[in-house]
Image 1 (cartoon, helix red, strand yellow):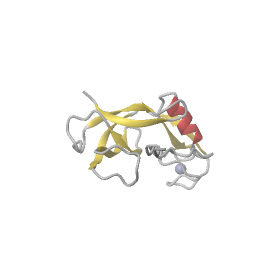
Image 2 (cartoon, protein in one colour; image 1 turned 120 degrees about the horizontal axis):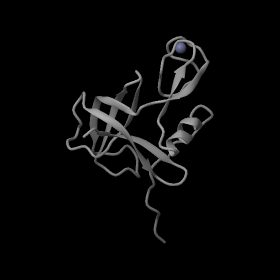
Image 3 (tube, rainbow, N blue to C red; image 1 turned 90 degrees about the horizontal axis):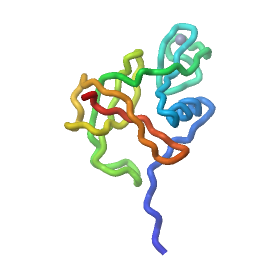
Image 4 (cartoon, rainbow, N blue to C red; image 1 turned 180 degrees about the horizontal axis):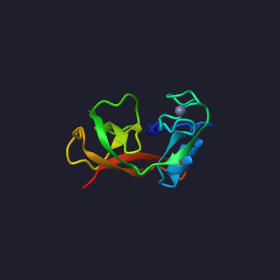
Length: 136
Ligand SMILES: [Zn+2]
């Protein structure tokens, strides 16, 4: 008997994040936006980090942004991730940011300020991951 190959760790959707992951399966990027003050934020949390209102809803994002910071990981923190891979903080044009992989990049790490757009990694029928790639 052989041991199964390690698999990539999976997000575990909660009541806070299940709508985000459902949108990802449709290849739609969404972010929480506060109805009280208009702040967009990420990651999803109970209250708006700007005004503490709990009245927020997911809103669509263009998926366009720029690289705030990027790095290349050569030693994965756990099994199941193929190295090297690139991780970046991306500033989205609606004024929020998220941490995600950068793929299809001609250089690594991708320079700060590089325009990027969201793309999708369909892992299986239940899981799609957002990633970003430089805009040609
Ligand atoms: Zn707010």
